[in-house]
Each structure stands twice: as C-alpha cells, then as structure tokens.
Amino acid sequence: MRNFTTVSSLLKKPILGLAAIALLAGSCKNNNDADNPPSSAISIVHAAPGTSELTFVINGSKANHARLTYGTALAYGVIQPGSYEFSVTKKDSTRQFAKSTNALKNGTYYSLFVVDVPSKESTLLTEDDLSDPKTDQAKIRFINLSPDAGSLDLNIAGTDTLFVKKADFKKTSAFSTAAPGTEKTFEIRENGKTEVLAKIEKVKIEKGKIYTILAKGLRAKTDSTKLSLQVINNK
Image (cartoon, rainbow, N blue to C red):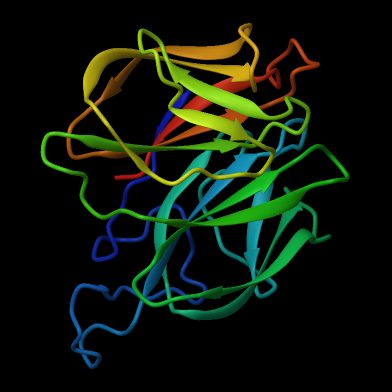
C-alpha cells in the first residue's frame, strides 16, 4: 500500500473514481448558471483498519467505479450542492452502514473518511480549504483517524515546534503554512510524550501544493493495519 496518495481533481476537470450518480460536470469558478450549474466536490478515503473493500453509496445508489480498499483515497468528484445520505457497503453486499446525512455547499471541496474498527465504522466529513498557499509555501493539515492511539502530536523532524498539538480521534486541524522540502520526516507522538509512535520519511512537500497527513491504523497491531502515517496530496 502506498503511503502517498494524490486525490487532486479540480471541479472543472473530469470526475475520477466516482460514478455519475448525482454528479455534475460544472465548474464553481463561473457564475453563469446556465452553462455551469452550481457544484461542490467530494473525495472518499477508506481509513477503517480491518474493514474490507468498500462501496461508497449516495442516496442508496453505488457511487464509485474505482476500488475502495483500506488506505485508498478516491479523487474529488463533482457533486451538486444539497443534502445527501452517505453510507458504505462491503464489496458484493447490499447492507449499508456508517450512514450519515450531510448538506453540501456550493463551491466547496469535501473529504469523507470512513473510520474506526469493524462493527463501529462511521464517517467523518471535512471541508477542504484548497485556496492557494502563500507564495513559495505549501499548506498541510493533520487528521487523527487512529481509534486507539489517543491524543496525538504531529512533529516535523528537525524542528523545535510541534506542527499540531493534541489531536484527538477524528479531530482535524486547520491547514497551516509549511515550507517546501524534498525529504521531510513527519512523526507522531502521544500528546506530551517523547516516544515516536509512527513516522513517514522522505516526503516531498512542494510549494503551491496542499496536503493532508493522516494518522490511521491501530497502535495495538503489528500487521498491515498497524498505526501509520499517510500523506494525501489534495491539490
């Protein structure tokens, strides 16, 4: 499984990974409603350790063609603003779970994360600020999606100041400015502690780009679902 995932697909670009259920091909950057209907965009991320391949469901209908396995982030797909029921099913099953009802706003990017352990799965919807970073900088946020890791601190190796402090389970930090670099190392620790619980090395952070760093998996495991970091390139 790759720990660096690109999901960037601007609203005016073709839909990648999501089916055409309730989706539009319009752009939010043009206010001519006749030519460009109102639109939002949503990305789907499978971050539920121990849960098998999933199907994403919108208002009762399957909404992804690409496979949605653990650690997968599907690209932003364009969707009409409005209220939707989101849920998932296991592959080749019709039983829906992790249901949530969400109102999507016009011109807004979202990520929907499927999280937690089997039989406790739920979803987390975030609004993604994909406005351009400051000149010659990048933007990074941190999300703690590990059910058993406790409250986490995120640090960039070689720096004295924590990048994010005390991120509880399912908590999302704001996007913060970060300097670009070719071989950055990100580390997580239990809040206030010094032991590194997981790290990801040689991460290339490019100016003008936007990233999400996920803590996912289980501290109690040593297999493919163990606690780890994943970097998603949002834009």
